[in-house]
Length: 305
Ligand SMILES: Cc1cc2nc3c(=O)[nH]c(=O)nc-3n(C[C@H](O)[C@H](O)[C@H](O)COP(=O)(O)OP(=O)(O)OC[C@H]3O[C@@H](n4cnc5c(N)ncnc54)[C@H](O)[C@@H]3O)c2cc1C
Image (cartoon, rainbow, N blue to C red; front, side):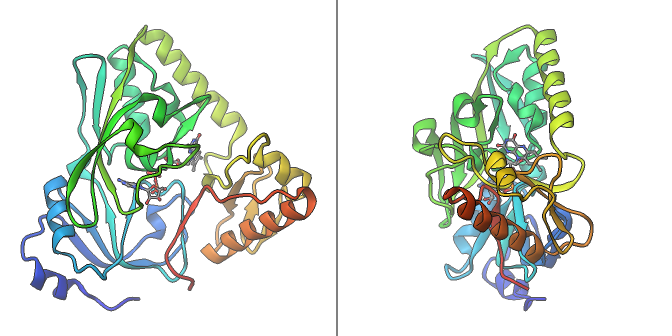
């Protein structure tokens, strides 16, 4: 448990419209279902509210943003400072002239894929299989099946730590594989995508294929964080992990998935430390057997318990 700093925050900024909660448990907001609380959780009710909050938040208080928690390990000691989660005020998706889709960043990727399909727009089918939200997709350059966020994005809006709202063109995002080059403190609020006209039945069929392929190859019903490590240049992380003999390896109740060994899973009672230690054990073994240092794709936040 952290000290409750909400009264002190409210004294500095009497009017945030969103919700402030002290010691909000984060485990149930992540796919792994592990980790401690947020010292303060703030759910702004829109971009203006978010900007107001950040402008008035003392500079020494750290800020962390989370999306749908599908690429996240929250450490057991929780996250000091403010954790921001974008919900209702960021949930609009609209189709705009020029085959474009504008969406708030609280919207799940799958809903954007579905909206595009219903509007006969192709190009966002790959979002069908990614279980995160648009904020996470923008930050991670989320992608699958040969396409990634950078291939469809026109621009994103975001708020910086000082509360300034900015628009970032695709090139400003400095995207590389599962990485956005903008400073970590930018909180994305909105994205604008370019679709291409297509046949809605064909797009729907392509989306169904994505679902089938996921169910066959990934433990999507488990408590997991998706791909744990980035694929190193010219190799596949799962092959290196398999070759290092780590398939099925366990630390406590955390296990390297038998089905897809770049996925770690919480069998039920794992702690964040179990999962992170398992990941580090895998990295060490892969380094010993192949000489390659795997890089975490999953984001780890907070402090040890
Ligand atoms: C079963 C499964 C399958 C997956 N398959 C894929 C896949 O095929 N391709 C793929 O790319 N990923 C995949 N992932 C990983 C994950 O879904 C993506 O990385 C996703 O984009 C994360 O979005 P999220 O909303 O869950 O973000 P979170 O996990 O909550 O956060 C991830 C990162 O994004 C940042 N972030 C979140 N919201 C914002 C915001 N509004 N502004 C700024 N930063 C923000 C967080 O600070 C954090 O650094 C998979 C995960 C699972 C569990």
